[in-house]
Image (cartoon, rainbow, N blue to C red):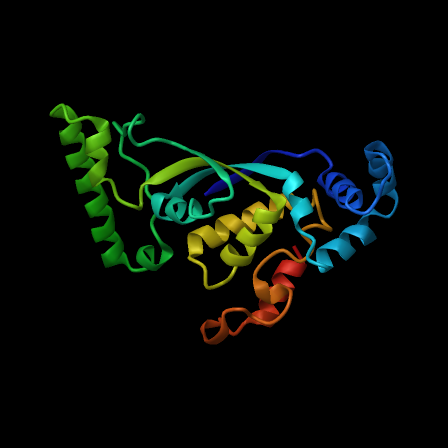
Length: 228
């Protein structure tokens, strides 16, 4: 898996602080921007603690992600308050052996892993036969597995990222999207440390929201994310 930050709103915390001050002040925008430099951290801590999160929608972050499975991207695009551009299996055919993700739970068992890789080889062979027979790539792709890797560009605003991290950084989230979410958070936290100070699963900010489904490791989770 490869995750990189492509671009983001310049000085995101300054933008958010100025937007928040605008709601409570008749000063000019330029004055608000300048004022936000002085006591920005304390002010941002206050508005986020009050749940005034709509102002985080004024900043956005774009990521490039490669080598994740289609199983992972199917989960990702369920977050609808975001923009996605994904490599097409209709226009990009896999003449070479398609890359695929192998879960650690499979690779750890030699016999199962061997059968898993053989199945991927068989799928690729049949996929190639379909293409050779003149079947369009958009139809041949029907046989490709969820394990096939994909590439995707993701853009989310600050508020949606907080929501995304609260769900996908949780230890109960599927392992692949969990790892991707953690890498995304690691990339942006240095750029907006106050806005994302308590980003992560719900248990970082209070009681575990999973109820009876809790992983039971809330203390370890808090330490992990607060030390990022």
